[in-house]
Amino acid sequence: MSTVLNVENLTQRFGGLLALEAVNMKVEEGEIVGIIGPNGAGKTTLFNCITGIYHPAEGTVRMLGTDITGWKPHQVTSLGFARTFQNIRLFSKMTVLDNVIVGMHTRTKTDILSAVLNTKAKRREEKACEEKALEILRIFGMEHLKYEMATSLPYGPQRDLEIARALASNPKLLLLDEPAAGMNESETESLRQTVYRLKQMGYTILLIEHDMKFVMNICERIYVLDNGRLIGEGTPDEVKSNPAVIEAYLGKD
Image 1 (cartoon, helix red, strand yellow):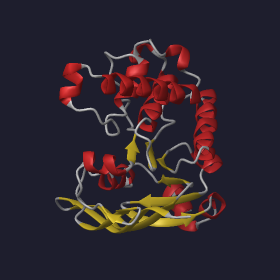
Image 2 (cartoon, one colour):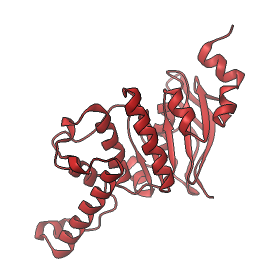
Image 3 (cartoon, rainbow, N blue to C red):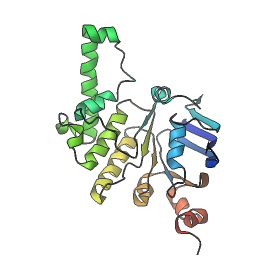
Image 4 (cartoon, one colour):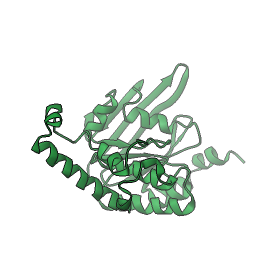
């Protein structure tokens, strides 16, 4: 089993605010790993440093052994990261199918001239992309919605579509930022089953989530942040019984 993500002593500052302080974490191939913590703990900041949205003040981020610290988001994506966001970011004027196909842009090979001339190679690649997009939509049971406009979908399927689009880049690591946010209980359970199915298909997943039931029932290991510091890590049972974690969530007696 290889280490897909290795974060070492990651520190981030915004002016005088220390948002992350010497955070260390690893994600191994095939794992589902969770990051939890109270609001403002630094979870999304950590994701932003990993994916190139922020340049960390100190520390390193390695992807499959390659130091990607300070890389731009498109460079990080081309290496094998794919990410969803807290707020849904679908292309509202595009169909469900086209939203997924857009996610393949880092893996397509035809150039501008081929597109202008509509060459055989370009048409062949378009067909392959459409077939791949339909395969991904089948994972979510959404292939019958392929020609629907993305924003016409209910909230839960829109969340699923965001994950489907991320999968289209064939990522080595899938980062999910609060995927269950705003979902009802049945939608959350459906999402849990989907994420577990992705693991069985060989995907490696790192997620941020506030729904503790969801996290505890799907993650193999969990990292806990509070005020930018890592205060606990381990299996769900180890994290639930960690006094520092209990204090961060519930406060002192």
